[in-house]
Image (cartoon, rainbow, N blue to C red):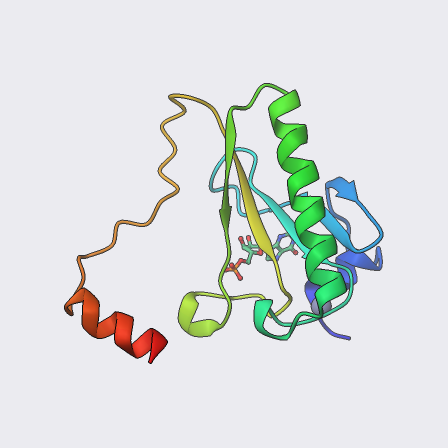
Amino acid sequence: MDCIFCKIIRGEVPCRKVCETAHALVFMDIAGDVDGHMLAVPKKHCKNLLDCDEESLHGLMDTVKQVSHQCIERGYDGVNLLHASGESAGQSVPHFHIHIIPRKEGDGIDAWPKFGGAKFEIDRIWKDLTE
Ligand code: 5GP
Ligand code: ZN
């Protein structure tokens, strides 16, 4: 399959491997945008959260937790997890991935989006989401 992350998983494209488990691989993101930027991907190809099978999803999240603990053991204080399912959400690579950003107190990293303020009354959106 002509998928860059599948190629990385198969070893056809090199990566800086952080952790490999039965169901997932974690490697350094090459963006160079923030220190410690990692990507966690399921080994079995799926586009995103919406079409991921349960076994892959659980395996991926277990691996994300393992790497998060690894960060703490190596002197970090926390992690941010970022994920986009779908182009409208900002997904650019169509193989499920979770961004892991290790954090230290006072590191100055702004990993939380600056939302522009809600456009609609909260109850209207609540009804759209639930009724
Ligand atoms: P998205 O925008 O889909 O949430 O994130 C895709 C991420 O994949 C980006 O942060 C981008 O830097 C990363 N990426 C794209 N191609 C490669 C690659 O060949 N190797 C690695 N390590 N990361 C990649
Ligand atoms: Zn893939």
